[in-house]
Image (cartoon, rainbow, N blue to C red; front, top):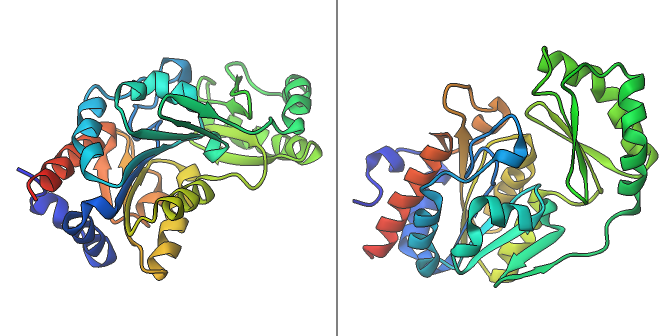
Length: 279
């Protein structure tokens, strides 16, 4: 079936990007966020698993494009496990915003930033002093720590309450704060999805890219694609909007295409795979 008008209805540079991918898929990189894009958002991140159609959709793409890469804030090995990505040969995972890399069954990573250990010890007292409400919890990702408010009685209010003290703590230990959907992540500076994506595309010599994401952490990747367009790399920006919930406005406003969460992303990838195989 391939890409019908439903998918080709995007205009301007987005449509041009899709046409470039279809014309020369071997020059294209398909880049994807994990949570909210390949896997539905859940209250407990340890329970997140990829949409059941992800594996098949990626298998249909990998042999026909230059590369398929997952760019995530999660540890690379966790994304591989939760996404079943190790079962799809050829998929590369850039974890911790590009600080880690899983490829061909091997994980490579630099030393952990020393500020992470300091924040790990200081964060519980800082949250208590700030009056963090019941349900606030900390996810330890090894190379970063994330403060979640999704389980509190008033998640948005809790996030605003904790924003300033978390910012102050991050600055004290030489880290930065990456905000997201009801989460504040403390991580090393100079590491983001935009830098990771740009480096990967240049490494592979890509001439076109499709990037799909769902949250504020994906804005850096969107900005990277927009910049690369000025350098002659064709780009398509896809926003994954959670079913039953509005997509993140900042992302949706800059996207060429908005799809209905991971199910919509999978459908797009399946159709794209069919289209490139028909060539």
